[in-house]
Image (cartoon, rainbow, N blue to C red; front, side):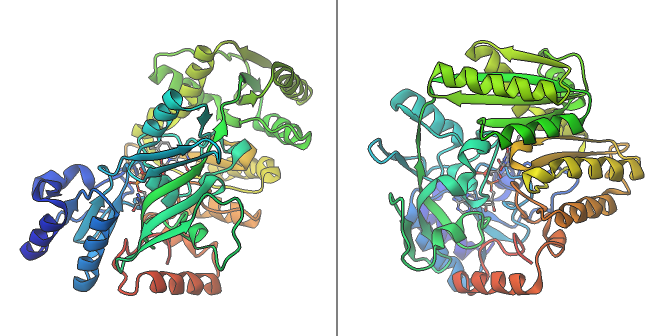
Length: 459
Ligand SMILES: Cc1cc2nc3c(=O)[nH]c(=O)nc-3n(C[C@H](O)[C@H](O)[C@H](O)COP(=O)(O)OP(=O)(O)OC[C@H]3O[C@@H](n4cnc5c(N)ncnc54)[C@H](O)[C@@H]3O)c2cc1C
């Protein structure tokens, strides 16, 4: 990177907040599997601004000199979106950690986008009667990254994904303007909804500097039920039937037993279910005890009539958290052996057909393959494993078949992790030319010189 640019960056943010050479190492990669992630450019420079004004000055400098900029949140992304693949100014949001306000009358928290999910949740636990239900699997993710990826997670069944819970944003455009999008409103029909356009745009349209989120009263009664089945047909039949009754648990998670066991072993924990081959984890959150018993009763009854072979009601918060922690750790337990983890999503009622199709495709390739996921949302994570520590030869072909299967069911190739840099070549199976042209036009309007995270999210 040009020395003059580095000097100017030091003037903007202070020289102690500009990193170069070997000090940039930790900012170059995210959590994408090492065998898949693109190579990062070591010619990059990392800056750590303290606020939107500094970011605006950085963007003006980069735009004038046409230097690529990549925004970095917590680095927990799974599709290489935050990796600077060309010499770039990497803007790390880690210093922007102010929790600005908890407005308990409007149920809204306003914070800077560098606050992590863990920091926000800890703050709310200590200081508020409210909580934020949306929980993507790694609490080191920052709010800005969760907005940029429109993250989901295990608790989206009841309260939706990030998109459903974001009320307002402050953003800095690639040309340097600072813009407020929406706010504490429940309704706003003035013009196009630019905020929704920014959500899920993977750091390609603007830098998110502030976030307003909708909060919820902490549910007073929580319960967790684990149920096992002989096969996925029975499990998915049960989850579909439960949703048809109108009961909406906080989460319905599906786990192949192979993954549940692997993860429990990894954590030196015990997985309570012994019979059957696949498990459903139901997390319930209700306002009163009667409602909790009622929902629990419906779940147990339907599971039993769908062929459940074992079920355990988890007593006490510690035991519930222990099991949820096993579910949330499946990724790190399997990561050393993974070639890729997909996040295909279909309409929830199509899940049984999708799972059947997965097994037949995996069988055809002789692949070691297992599944965990948010079946209540129609979203599953399929693990494709390394073979002799290498990406299997069938990887691309098999993935293309899995994607085609999902698209044929009205699904998407990504319901959570995004396109980033690793899935751009697969995007064409889902989007037609008209859609791609519209997306390119939008990108050009926001970012006329294509400086912000190019070669990401769109084709
Ligand atoms: C163990 C594990 C489990 C996970 N489980 C889930 C899950 O259940 N559901 C789910 O949806 N995801 C899940 N993820 C993926 C990941 O947590 C999300 O993609 C998260 O949203 C990334 O946030 P981050 O701050 O780490 O962003 P990063 O990885 O740093 O960046 C991701 C993208 O966001 C952009 N970005 C970051 N901050 C900003 C900002 N302030 N302004 C503009 N752009 C920005 C970056 O440029 C990049 O394009 C999981 C990841 C891991 C490692």
